[in-house]
Image 1 (tube, rainbow, N blue to C red):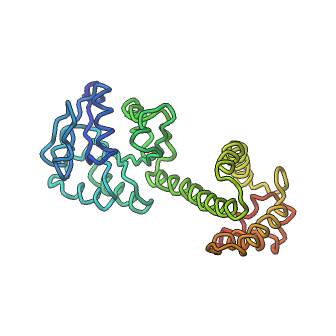
Image 2: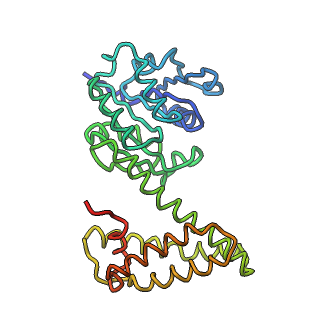
Length: 294
């Protein structure tokens, strides 16, 4: 029968900046911490941890094993290096390595075949932002196992979100949020070029972005809700307004020395929506242009 001491023990495999930070946090929280890294010198400076001689030894020591390495090729290599796969039985592998849904599905299958439990997490923070009330980690996998280790996971941050019982859900959500982030960031850079071209202060641009951003976040959430409800009638923003707005953006940037692909593709998506008769619908209806027919 498991004792409560199991829940105050953890092995951390991978001692990059994030792995090292997590090991330190668990030590500070009073956990018995074992660590392992391919390069043992990475453990230098860590206090009050036990250094395992191998990944297999680190897995053998505890029932909760956190892996945070460079990529999932390294994760699979580490897991495959275990000579006695029976040691995975009853263990929980929490993989916090950044990767794709397909990679995570492969690792989940491997661990399940070994009679272990698998959780996958996507960290939405830098090492220095770990452990804060708003630190977000997107988790997926067995919900019973997640709840079992939730107190231990709360050491890492105050916003540990369990998304789905399929482990691939966490990298999928990670990619979804990054798609939004990079799309917005590229748009931000084009905005910089517009400001520079027309003599606007970049400080004013940054201030204005900060002032309008909260309202737009609420608007984005509303639009996602409209898609989820399969509701396309106008509630906030007629698509027609954005047809002309994106055309103005593309036309103005055409006269500037910037790459033209980004503004043109945005204008093209709205133009296609207009040609499909969606101008009198809510802006969210552009999803119908983005998705391809089955």
